[in-house]
Length: 187
Image (cartoon, rainbow, N blue to C red; front, side):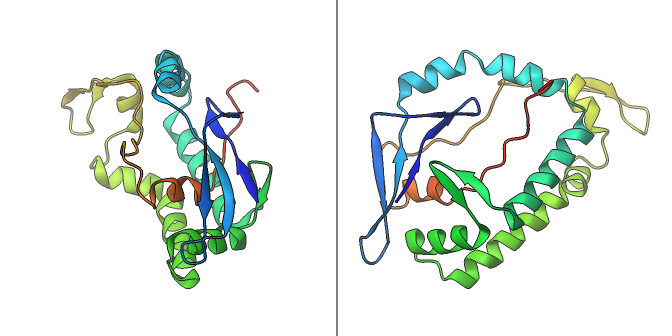
């Protein structure tokens, strides 16, 4: 059985609260997922601005390159997961086992995710209508057509929230996540 710690600021965190991830049909225990609580999230949010500042030091083009590298690792590599590691085939098997989605559809979803992530530069170019992404990082600049623009972040971070009432599928999403953590700046 896989033991998956919570990840706090890129480091594994062993929690006292754990959820057992089971096969959707047989009930077989497949993994243990460490849980966090609102107090930990609140404590971690105190460092959110620092994390944003570090990310702002990395040029947009380099961030996009990191995303592309992560996409290739997601699709092809044996990645660390909790107390062990996970191959792409393992990922497909576990995702299918915990969600009921057929394995061929899990593979197809991996391919779609890979396609989007490897084309992130083009996706962002289309969404911003060709805006220089460094303008978003700086918060101001001049568009290609000579119009001054400015942007202000409304929060230092964004993140998903799980519903308070846990459904059968809530922890599944965390189990089926394949992660890639690029090295910290200056590491």
